[in-house]
Image (cartoon, rainbow, N blue to C red; front, side, top):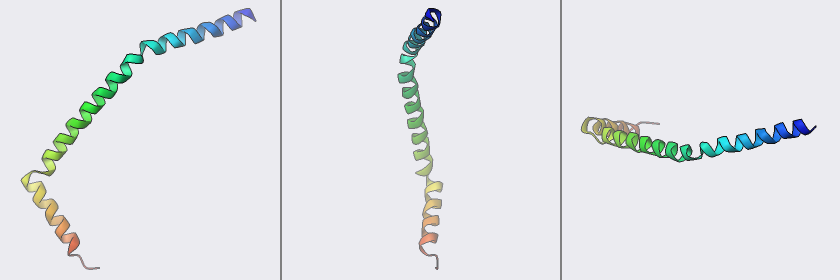
Length: 69
């Protein structure tokens, strides 16, 4: 019984140590994710506001508004 309790306690302590080692990685992963999302948003904004894409989107909206029901 003593050995089982000791093994369980050791597993708990080792698990807590492993969790502490990874604590700093979460923040950097979130930061990299945010940077990637912002970069993607900037590229998407530039594409959508470019001349040909903007004109095509306006034509699509005009056709949708003039459609007969």
